[in-house]
Amino acid sequence: MVAALAGRRNRTGPGRRWLIVGLCTLGAGGAAAAYGIVAVDSTVVMGGLVLAELGLVVCTPTLVGLIARLGGGLPLAPRIAVRDLARNRSSTAPAISAVMAAVLGAVTIGVYFASDVQRQRDMQVAALPEGYAEITRGVGRNGERADPLPTSRLVEAATSTLPVARTVELRAATCPPAAPGAAPATGPVYCWLTPLRPAHRRCPYRPGEATKEEQRKAARDPRCHENSYMMSGGGNATTIVDDGSTFGVISGAHGDDLARAEATLRAGGAVVADPALVEDGRIIIAAPTPDDPDGVNHTATVPGYVTTTAVSRIFVAFSPQAVAEAGLAVELRGVVVATSRIPTRAEMGAFNAASEALGNNYHGAVALPYRPSATVNLVVLAIVAAVIALGAAGIATGLAAVDSRPDLATLGAVGASPGVRRRLTLSQAGVIAGLGSLLGAAAGIGAGWAVLAALNRETLSVWPSDVTYPLSIPWPNVVVAVLVVPVVAMLGTALFTRARLPIERRA
Image 1 (tube, rainbow, N blue to C red):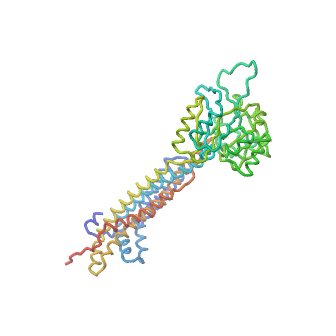
Image 2: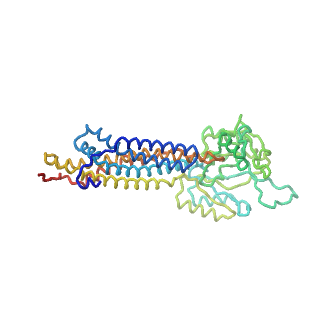
Image 3: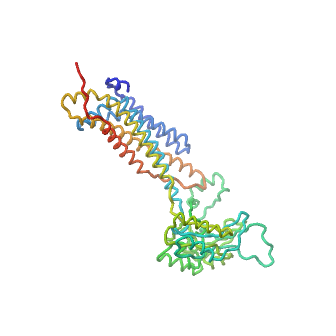
């Protein structure tokens, strides 16, 4: 850098030993990161990634020299540009490394954010068709359940606030009436129905009770893999009691699938969305109790059908006959509101207020599509990386321009056009920003994959395990880094560079 500012030529190259050192460092860092993934040690993974990045930095001068060798067939200005950058590697390589580091960090974090968004999207479970709503009766702080309100009051709360197309009653299983003369319960009593997998499809281990060895076995057993999920917009309407009259509205099922589901409910069966629950057209339903939390000792077998068009992948519908066969009763839980369009924010606020005003622990919820919040983070990352990359490219281009003054003076003396200088600096900026961004994007995707692999390995090392991270690449960020940043650097350099060639007096 000092040599460039003083007008001296720096012709020294990095030497092969530095390339060997860089490649060895890069390989050692990759190996350390791979070991950290297998050993479930995040510290080793991060140390390996840092070591790999240092290896790339050490290899950068050699890459600049390689580009200079390959530039022999380029036009005059780009050819001089890559030659001067290779000759002035003491300032070019650090600038390229700075661009690479900025892009690498931004892309790595962007890969994590994008993958986390995709993970959350995969975990989303629809409660109702999009834009539909429910008003349901909940439970008080002490477990009390107030008497249900008339359906007309619930419908009025919905129609006065939402664009209602239709409303249907929402019913659920509950405890049977107490026998005459029976002592009242001393605390909250809950009764519900749940579908059970056939015995050969059930996980043989219970969470919280399995030993370390059993947890390791459960983590490898497909029967024990239960996917976690997140639900927005209530969720009470995902398990209902229905005779076939409201199934289509609440589930969103349609076509022949809807007809088969309704026929199953009319026949006294149950409809589910999970195919693992149904075997040979039959399904086991269970009524758990405090002494039998899984309900395996309180079961009934009824006709079963797997719906393929219901919007919720955890949807369950029991017929009134199936509920009675399990020894439970049916209660009115609330209403489901089919809307003609997605409600506005103002309408949803009024609907929630009207639902709360009903009392009796009633509350309302609207099913809305999942909107990730990490998009803003990705945009900020792209902007920050672009600013750092452009700054590094500008500094290095300015130093390269100082180093190129003797060549520019020679070109001016032999009659070269003034535009040569602008094309020369434009080419220098393009090489610095382009090479740094390309290396940073490639390394960032690799580093992001390593981070996600380490997180997934750690997740799967315990049981029950959470949902793993898919590899999702933030392509807009990558495009900005690889294409937009170099183009902006080139245009900015061309805009602020004087086209007049320097004239030097020589003795």
